[in-house]
Image (cartoon, rainbow, N blue to C red; front, side, top):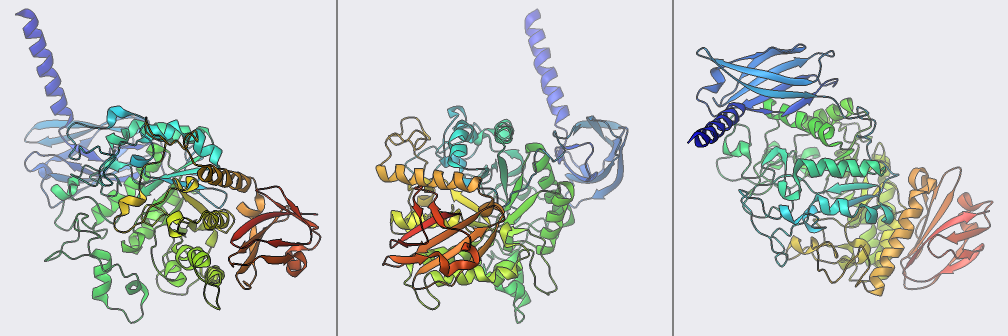
Length: 617
């Protein structure tokens, strides 16, 4: 009987302490000493009645409550606090006082990460090669998190393209040797925040809690472990950020702090997806509102960034992620659907705290002028974006794809690629744009090229030598294929070898065909050459007018000159270095960086080939 009483007492005590600790939830969940952003707006939620009537008290040296904001929903309090430069790390006790009763929660002030942004938040630039992974589809490194009790989506079926397949961050950690040997410097994953939706949680773009990392991917500990492992190798981490929308099961959708926390319409209104209404001098204000305030899909409520509390929440969350997880760069999803002045504020806040931090936005638009509008540009217009770079859909849709699939013409074929790059004068710095052949939303490039290996090699050679920051989608290097239609799940299939029992393993090359091995070797060789090429990663670009399907451009600096020769025609083409004497004077031979073959002043290139040549004296 005595032992039963002790067990009962311990159980009761633990339940009491736990309830006490959970009296309220505070966002952001913690902060750091020594931050430039030392005036923070806490959003505090409790399920206790009339919580917003309670008084708040903080008695911690250097932390001051400067304002209490009465929020519409009685379950929420907004508290503005100031953190002095002399404050010490520790647990800040936030007390809530009502009718003589005092409840409290602990809110942690941490030491900053090592380096205060010098060992991380380094930004990405043209010296990098970014590898895009959908974590659920790359490798299952920890089977214990395949199912997480209490989460709505319990699917685990690799035979279904829209179910979860079990890949996680431990799986990526296990294969960092593969990425590094491939020549990758930077990892970008589709979102890793909690997605507690009932289905379609494999892609990660429907957040349900900004301050939780999805436990099926390994949770906070795995994300930190992955970040640390990358940085120890001198590699970088990009986080995929979504400001525009959340998931339908998001904690704020279920219980919004204010009625206008999300954009509401009398009946469902989706965005019109038409970026032109932003800058059209003849455009309709109503249609602009539909673009920005309409919902991306019926399952993705549209965030109201004009709400000052939610705007602060999002900006603080961005800074929190960079500091908490050691993020180096920021890819911003659905950039064109956001409130652009808000995005300028958020971008500026990140750069203020982390001066080397870079962001690039998803700008799925048509036309170089349209794309440049959303980035730092040379336009003399009322709105000026401070976004450093964009996902360069123009060099894909109006560049490399027509170059390799259309017959040559005055405005067709490879002339489209030349013309698109000629429009780079619109950008402040086109080298900040991220160039790519495919991604998780597009038909895989190998399929786009009708499974023509030579054309894929030409695409990869262009990707790794053109201006900007190249991004490689997982599996492109081993001929992964898939059509976006009829379903985007077909371009998001599992990486071979990421699961025990896979018959084909790209990590070890076991089971790969000769063509797959050859493509992997080709990509690896060129990517690693690029990594050490000052001309490609930091040099200038000079392109020459395409001639009957032949396109020649140079990457060069004071130390190195690289000649890129793309023959998109069906005929062998003769090359004479003298024709390009602006860049070839004083050079006597050209060495193929893949084969090592040397060519003299005059040589021919076969049809449907691209050579990357280092010029030698």
